[in-house]
Image (tube, rainbow, N blue to C red):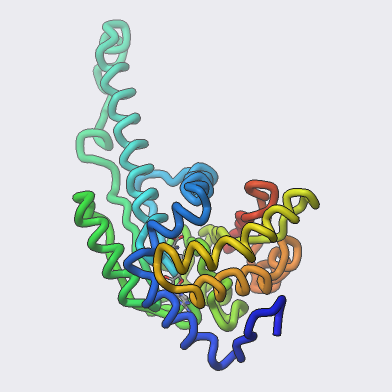
Length: 278
Ligand code: SAM
């Protein structure tokens, strides 16, 4: 028993995780907003700001669930493209610029920069189904695909992606070292691994408040909103068991990534780890 919770044997873990996300899929986005008081949106936005993807980039979003990271990625890249176009249009309007740059080519702007792509990969069909419905509702389909797959055995060839993300997913994986090896394999040389995960709160006062909130409130919210106390009890338990910032950084380095860094968000409630494949 761990903090009064039932401890799940390793072999049972994958089955348990599948059941949890199958049960919560329909309510997953609502629960995320309720439990984090909307702050998960800021954590995900921060991931995108740090990533700062350029047009043409290929993203693999592992444990992508209902697609929040991939949808933000496509939105961010579109915004960048629009900004470039506007900037190019403005400079073309300036007479002095036109006078001196008759040979200036805006080929990239006219043809559109190389298309960006995001692949949402998740072990749970139900989460992907809900995500696809959400993307369809937002009218987003270009550049987005949904693939059922296990982080420990990704259904992709080597050296395929510029960026690999895993947001609030890696603590659910049974063999984290295996998932990290797979991340390294599918990234192109120079590619970046980025992980958002609950971590260790560094401020002792905040740590006490956070403990009280998560142990007492999260299963209650789970019961009230999703009618599922147990799944949310699992969530709190899995957060407690996950390695802290420094230990996880060591694991990413051991897998073979370089320049591994992390940023604490909300006082360490969440950490963003990043590393590169050479
Ligand atoms: N990334 C999304 C987000 O930030 O909203 C979803 C995160 S959700 C908390 C965790 C996801 O991890 C679930 O959709 C679950 O199905 C998925 N998952 C768990 N184990 C996995 C594995 N071994 N391989 C791929 N996905 C897995």
